[in-house]
Image 1 (spheres, rainbow, N blue to C red):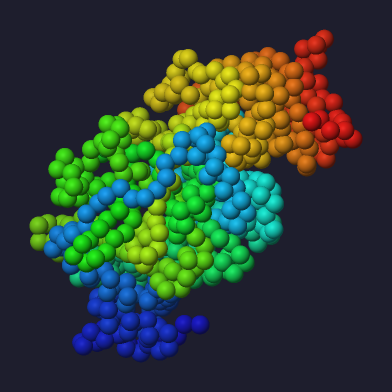
Image 2 (cartoon, rainbow, N blue to C red; image 1 turned 90 degrees about the horizontal axis):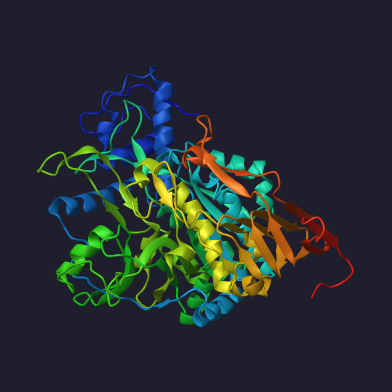
Length: 622
């Protein structure tokens, strides 16, 4: 229990308030020594406001314990960074960019299949880290973003999709143990994430397979002297420190050390609303293994001037240093102009894209070296500060600032001998975030909103079938909802993770692609062990195989009213409203939920023209 004694007045010598004992006195002395005595100015006398004062020290204890080195270390770092900001120091001064070593893979190429084959063997030794500290307010959604549906045909949430993908990898690779998932949450998202997992029995994950690691905030700063901003008399303004804290949390929780000891070789970091991010995983792991990379950035093509960071090799000859790192887009152009490209951020040899691949904040780290690095650094990444100054004197701020850190800055703490590279793939196979409200997305290209993310997921699956050789027609007339137009919302193809994560596996599921035809307005949903030998689809079809059911679809002709999109109702849930439409399934669409074990043969009855299911538990369908 807290003890508050008499004499709260601040001493003339700028010491801690008089009369404190124990931990409260220690915390107050930490603040005074760090130049924060102003936080005690105006405190009332003993016997009054004691509950508020207790709250102050509780908040201070949390801030002290959650930052490596405590508040004193935070203030010391802040003073250095704020002084550099006031001087106008260029953090990239002396560094010269060049294109780093990496591998560019075209989906479906021999190089892709080779990388997938290597990575498929590595995936059973991979842990996963999901950075999910934010709410969906920017999207017009008041709850956690991972609760949003990836698409409205099945309404599978992002979190369910990610967990089911990890479980599919686990099953396909015959992993010896459950593959672990760590989810970084915040004070805003922790309870809602716990509630969601509990309500859905962890989406089938084993007990202990999913671990939540909670990010705390850091003190906000009111001026260039790094004075902590007050929030009333007895509280401190605090703000998020940035997603770079994930490394601190993975260290302090001991998770990565535990994973390395358990024999895991890789850790994959991924984002909260990019449903395409797992498709290139096998290939990315294959590149990591082939090139011996400690850190491997998954990247996509980047256009000159695009608001996406670029992966570059930076060399500082004066200091004899080099590193491969993400350079933020607003720093890349001036850096290029000052060094190797007078025209700045312009296209490379292909005349279209920047030669520096685009960072999407998804990357693979080698687990054991990563664990060793965390031990050395405590997971602390390089920080930066971006104050908005009140005037030209650069002393006071328009609003409180804070130090920030980014997860992708991890290579900055590595020894030069550690290899860092990239795997570059096409956008459609790897990257379509859901991060913008529709009103903002109208003026952006790409929109990166709920509608575009859903459309890109359908296109992603449809295009994979085209690569396999299936005749999947393309939408001929664009659809527009709330000002966002798309010509890839149809056909709506959903291939659940249980259908296979690699292209090689998918090709086996469609062994005779010349006999598979999907019309431009159709909807096809497949999940589980489903092999499609011949199909003509003009409408909707849903097949889910569970509990070790093996399904073969052959000689199937499916024509019906399919699925349609209609304008969202005025009282529609937020997840629907942010798209502008809802998806409706017609009554005549066949939905087959086939539970095993056993073998199922699905074909069209020539008499009724409807699908019939034959169960054959004792014979092979090969």
